[in-house]
Length: 219
Figure 1 (spheres, rainbow, N blue to C red):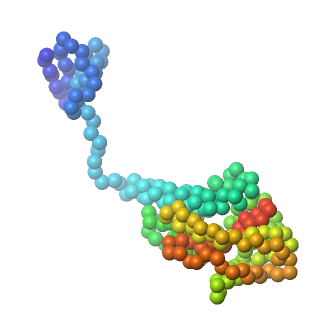
Figure 2 (cartoon, one colour; figure 1 turned 90 degrees about the vertical axis):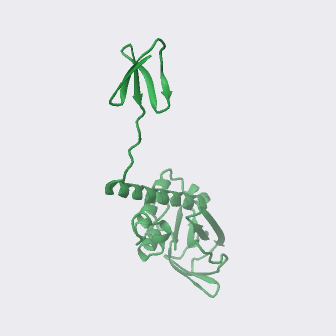
Figure 3 (cartoon, rainbow, N blue to C red; figure 1 turned 45 degrees about the vertical axis):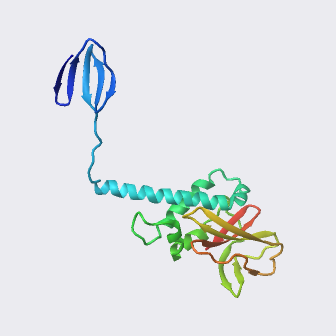
């Protein structure tokens, strides 16, 4: 056979048809002629600043989406009772906003970092998981004192509800929870319950309030 190669591409004169890859070359037929071309190589080199920023933002977006999924999984029973097919979208947006409160450099910001700030905690406290905004009781504030949780409610209610101690490790996708069923709070806007879960390193502490048609919480 005779081989003529020019500028990375050549024609092959042979009695036998050739096609496919051999080493660093690709053989194929074009207009009745056998052609040989060197396989393209991936361009290597430093990424532009714009490409680096997009990559960092995509990394943060992935972390926030995973955090939203973990939160919904930890509250799956309560979320399912709200019958909102678009809840996952609203929770994902919330996680993105909270992540942006993290003062760490772009690319290193996390939902946990955002929840450690006053702005991130306020975003979470103002978020109502239910779609319909009615006069449901919600938690205004909570603090831990001598083994007890002191909870301030927005309004008294005679409807039963559940307080949920929730701890989430967003980096590992792990969570723990404990429930306190409250049957009557009509005469008091402040509740005191015994704390069940001990603070655990790497976990964010939440207190959620859940009842018929509503779900809300604070950090």
